[in-house]
Image (cartoon, rainbow, N blue to C red; front, side, top):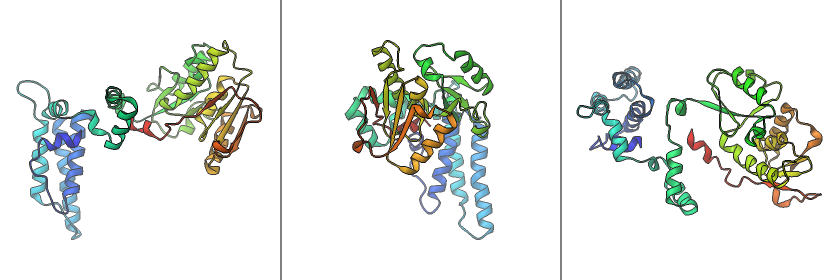
Length: 315
């Protein structure tokens, strides 16, 4: 979308050896106007100054430098985008964003084609809309945590709710509970220094990644009238262990974690050790899932098939 807005203001893009630097600078400036709500005077002044500083530094060492006409070109484009429309307070950049671009522009064509084939155009458009920033919190760096109480909360149970709320408070004022039981925390230092890290109360896990574990647990919870204590489940492709930890915290009798990659399996075991789960409650198997057979009947298998980092689109 940023490029779409810029294309509306540029009849002929600069060419030559500095074109990529100019393009990157324009993108940075446009992003500040469109999404970061940076004051317009600061966007123009500071972004243009970046090119001037680059010009002076590189010129002094007899290297490539940005010609003055290109600096003036960037200044002109950003000034045009930062103007208000008619008698309104709306920036010209935002007007172009809404009228000339779509969230679909931010997705690789091959991925759009795949989504439309599998989910249809309407759902694909909803996905594209969903990954766009909506407010300041959307563009603020954050980390999602799952706790040992999260699955119970997603099932509507009160067990551990007091401890959960206390943890949210300890993690700081920029922390918040998400609807499915995760905690979203503003990035603030090393996570190992955060409350209850050493106690093994929580682990880092994107909120979207928690959904498969919640779905499986809910299905078995409903099927067996809320009693999970006699059920055995399997987590395929288990490393680094977020979903395995969810299943263990849910109260299943036994969880088998299958992971084909021995290096990732080492990390899985290390994470489970930190979380202090009862080792009699789980096994870690280093093997390809297609080649593994259980020794006893299992009640559920978690296979997060689309786990291919598409959730990082929201970042």
